[in-house]
Amino acid sequence: MNLDKLLTIALITKNEAKHLPDCLASVQDLGCPIVIIDSGSSDATPEIAEQFGAAFHVFTDWQGFGTQRNRAHAFIQTPWVLWLDADERLGETTRQDLIQRISQTIPDGKIFFSINRLSIAYGREIRHSGWYPDRIVRCYPIAQTQYSDDLVHESVLVPSGVKVVELKGDVLHNTYADLNQHLEKMKQYAFAWAAQRQGKKSATPFSATIRAVFAFLRFYFLKRGFLDGQQGLMIATMNAVYTFLKYAQLWQLNRSKSGSLKG
Figure (cartoon, rainbow, N blue to C red):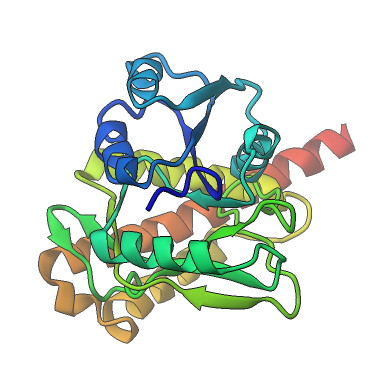
């Protein structure tokens, strides 16, 4: 069954030529319109989008992940939207459940849908480490809500009283393939997190270090990262690094702001 009158697949991209073909192929059988909001790709991302018949819109004035996602709303003509990231693949079980649910659910804002992501990091499916299950609201009636305007770690705003229905199966998330990719993404997220909290939250190098230690202990032991083998150790360690980076960056930003005020 085609959902072309009911559902739009939406993505935000930048230089996703490596991942985008598999992502779009995983939703092609749905027959849905595809809307891509790009922030200025210099690789083959636009050409790949064209091959799959996606509507491709470029906004290079980056204002954060939430704002970039919300820009897609102006180009969506169906009552429902499903958001995917370019490094995600819609699994068959989730696809079939989505078809059934969307075709039978009135888009009146009373029901939203969540997907469950199964991440692959460093060549292994991660089923612990605080990464699984990874439920996230990604499908909602376009007229009823939008994403938060956070610079990073944006989320769908779920109004009070809305029932979130869990779609069956897993959406495969091909996350970090190597250390360099992991580090680059962490730096991007950490600095955006700190910028959003500058002047609103305090931090010191000491507090950043303490938080980093507790982050490692939490993800490796409490979240059972040790059950994910060497990859679990990598994830716990990198979570500690990420925690240190975001609080250390916040400390620097607060100091620079304080210095400018004094000047």
